Image (cartoon, rainbow, N blue to C red; front, side):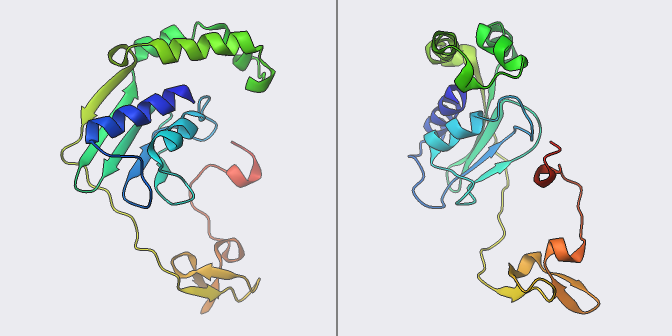
Length: 189
């Protein structure tokens, strides 16, 4: 999480933007599902104000320790964790616990503190690579409150997610529609 926090602060500073209050900025984290350091996204949210709940954050699913911060009118910047720093950080005792499946809250506090201290004390230039993305294009679907009742389960579904089967509107689960994506809902990450 401290890596994500520092990523977010650096990206904001590079773009010259304050922490987001509404919907004016977007963070695209390159982590994946089941990625061993997904807590990076928590730090990015805290630093930037971009959250999943406000549709200001997306997970790109690349399995990388990096993010893109985009602010309309200000541009976009990609900040990644340098491989050399990841190698150095990976030698911390904290990660030997994590590799054995031990949850962070169960790791001795002094072990956790040492790993966090390495992240907090590292100079930015040793920790991160910063790239301006002058040709970056990002667009979100326009928000809509239009909804339709699923003809099978009778629950409302927002229009863009309605599937029509035999002329009837259905929600995605009732329609049987599938798309290639991790089976997060089944827990098979």
